[in-house]
Amino acid sequence: MPHTADLDALTPFLLELNRASGEVILPLFRVENGLEDKGGPGAFDPVTAADRGAEAAIRALIAAHHPDHGVIGEEYGEDRPGAEFVWVLDPIDGTRAFIAGLPVWTTLIGLRRHGRPVLGSIGQPFIGEVFLGHAGGSRLVHGAGERVLTTRKGAALKQAIIATTDPDGTFNPAQAAAWGRVRTSARLARMGCDAYAYAMVAAGSLDLVIEAGLKAWDIDAAIPVMEGAGGVVTDWSGATVGPKGGNVVIAGDATLLAEVLPLLAGAG
Image (cartoon, rainbow, N blue to C red):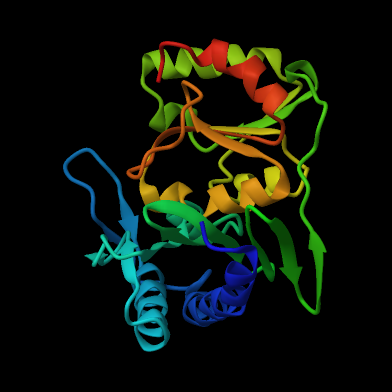
């Protein structure tokens, strides 16, 4: 793993990537945005000019400043994915929210070293927030200020606020039943916030997020942010999330994770 100082030295560039992507995305938010459907028959997989333009802008900056780095992106695929350092990009996580005019979409930018996520950011340019960090610490940058991110500790499941994006659209029957067990036991559940929910766990507002079928670009950026804020990210069995994503649990507290995993057993 790179030294903390090395990762801190990269955070201004990470903020620059967020600024550049936001400059492409914001003029296309809540206006005509070139919506297309990448899905096959019976599926809806939206993409907009903002998705493609933002990823192109991020890739151009990486190529200019770190030409030896690789890139994996949702819209334009892989470029040297075996490099020592690889950026993993989702220019708009939550495209459905974006086209609905809801400001819970985010830009996810993660950096791997030797295949492991070591630095990441969750940006929401319409609100003006960038949640960023690594294992040495995470912070929220907003406007002219910033604050340290710390997850909430000590909440049992019966006291927890939990989230998922779309239980009807992403869970199979066994996964839906497992989600139902967790939701029944929790204090409050919220749906439809995509990766902005991950940021809220890092900020201590939410306690737990459960998702299924994530791609690498859906989760890589969040892992270092959560680690730096004191949280934990695993798959549904409690193992490390693999390089291609999968079924994921994001928890602010390892004790809460240990309470939830048995309710997910066998469904992942």
